[in-house]
Image (cartoon, rainbow, N blue to C red; front, top):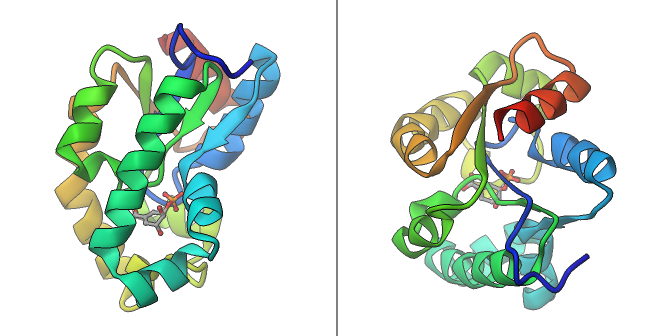
Length: 170
Ligand code: S3P
């Protein structure tokens, strides 16, 4: 359902390549609900793809749109909510996540690269993707950990196994 007086069933956070989209879809199926993905909502609101928002409006504007999309998703959706990798950079977002069933999907660089490649349209990974990913993760790991009720390791696990681990963790 969508009209969420109860709040989301699960909120997935983690870096690009952690499996949020794949695992989110599996979780939604198992829970008999749907996924709301903030990247999708931002693109719809802006009327253009994320790389164009970064180029034409800049990252600060993207982060504003993202904070608004996260707020809307968390208040309106009672299914699975999947947040863009950088959403947790916003202090307001981290406050909103307090007390919610947030799961951090942890992944190592080599695995993230294997999953999504590094030629995907992620503006922050456009140049020196491996180095950039590492730096992003160094900055963000403490924030993912801070907001998470549970950390689920995704290494050596199939998406189904990760989805099960998420359910077990909550
Ligand atoms: C970003 C991750 C992307 C998207 C944007 C910025 C980030 O989402 O929101 O490119 O800062 O890590 P995914 O985590 O779904 O790739």
